[in-house]
Length: 572
Image 1: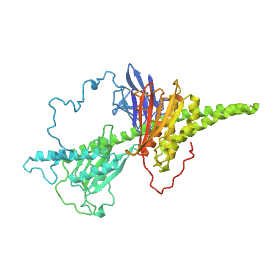
Image 2: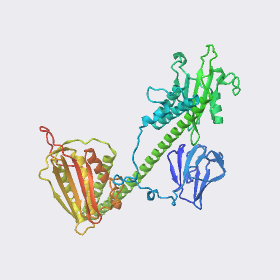
Image 3: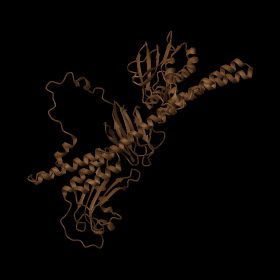
């Protein structure tokens, strides 16, 4: 489905599907897409679906509508178009083309048993070896006999290669910018350097990292003053500049700040990304006030300027990718939060309706002095109290990372308590609940309360799966393997079973096949508890035949002398 995804602005991370024939954008709440941007008009623009084409129409807005940095009144959107409204930047993505070729039919990955004809590895090369092509092996220099042009080309490739590595190895903007400055100071003799980024709210350049050359005296490193003249020129013209002598450069007014500051040479380049300028990189040579200026060969050249432009572009792409990644993460978090709230609200609503119904019966029974009606109403309230208690405990268990509170306990006693709790539910559902404890199972070290919850969730699901079976039966048994040092709780049922396409989804959060009765938290919580114990849950199932869940964990026998706590009670 076609969508607009906000990558810059106060609504960053928001994705809107363009399902309707007309989708309106603006600052007012009546719009399909309300943008919290003071520079957006109340009714700014519309996206109209016309014969599977999406047309962006400006509604005579105050500040205009832009697509790919060009102002438009009406524009047919293409996938990847950048839509700018006020300070809000969005990416348009078209629905996937249904006629796209399925490459799975044309490409076959050949296994080891059937190697491709004539295919064999003749040479391999590591990442480190590949880099030597650009800058020579460690401790060696480039062949001095090669031409100056080739030497410069290799040097430039080396710089770009190392810049690409720096860009690809971090998602931390500050670390990335600091590394870029370090590389620049390695290949050009400069006194000072600074990288500034554009603030999305104020659109002002803000310094992020700075660096001084090792030859700059400490007393001149207190504060770096960067010429507003240069910054304004670069941002306005969107091009890098090189000045070799500010006092003689015709581009600068004699009263300009660059002439008065002692700057002899400077390079300033825009960090131009896919969607605009994200900042600038600035380096210069500096003569402190009061010091005499001696004529010396220029340190900066046109080649330096070209490389600086290329490096700034790579850095800008990395910054945009990181911002896009952050927006995607935020979008996923918002989507997950919305799904969680919607799912839990639905279950809580059903539970409250049950409690309300039970309360009504209790009230009616008290008014008529009918104890049977009161008991029936209280039974309904009690069942729903148990549901909401289980829901809250599952939420806490799943959301909280915790180490199991290991202690000596009897696994058979834990399972027996679960069987006792679930016997009434099994009887009401007409399910035969059988229990076969292992006679050789010793006392083990595990978190009895957590394991009780894990087993309870699986047994509850097994009983629910057998409700529609003619002779529903759930068998719970324990096994102990001294050879493999493992303990198992197996829960087998002859219920409806699980299809192959669903069996990999059952441990996903909020995936439930119970309809309104299931929360989709039980099995994920059980799996989490088993994995926290160093174990896991294995499932085998056949649709229409039944399922078997094996809860397996390491069998850790407590050392002699550790007091044994008798397991008698569990809070649900």
